[in-house]
Image 1 (cartoon, helix red, strand yellow):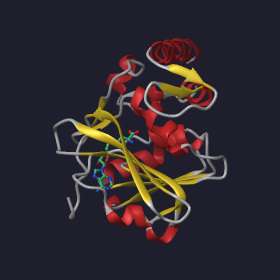
Image 2: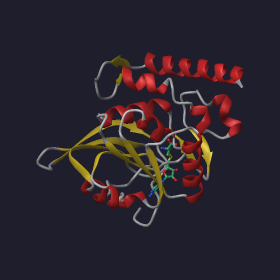
Image 3: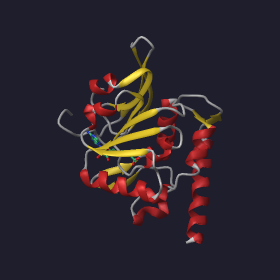
Image 4: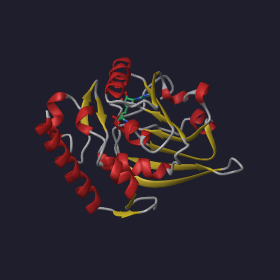
Length: 226
Ligand code: SAM
């Protein structure tokens, strides 16, 4: 009902303010300590409370990760904003996400790009995510069930790839499925320890450069290869 939507909207604006207090919001800057105005506007619109379990809705706008069942989490809003920013996507971009989870990250991204493909390895989460995104009216996100270590060959190559679970090393299929000039953002490191958020760039001749952006803590990438 309208009253609840107002409360949620106020809480969402408060969350945006809190994130903005810790960073410099600019018109297009990239990297730790900076977030673009466009992304903060989207963070102020996407209804995160619709992506968390019913009993967590009252804390949906705390700037923290939350459990979504099956031992998985919806990421911290600040990290969602930062990872989105690091991808530096254009309106025409086609993006791959590994680790659909609740679908929140995909929803945020979908406001910025043409098409999002998101892979989820837990069948029940994939199904719930697909239903949730359809109910909320997202039409440019496709949720695939499968092991995202291998990427999504049939839809490759991608302008950007985002991995929202921690890998011990960067999966080679993901690098192969990244377009020249594209970016991959991925947490790399030991499961259940602190990992490094890495920004991988493929230049116009296909050469790869990597930068460590920030220490992070993600649930592990699972599947046959990890
Ligand atoms: N992006 C999600 C969101 O916005 O809610 C949060 C993702 S949660 C931190 C990580 C997700 O990655 C979990 O849902 C987990 O099941 C999924 N996952 C783990 N290993 C995977 C793999 N090999 N392929 C696809 N998904 C995987």
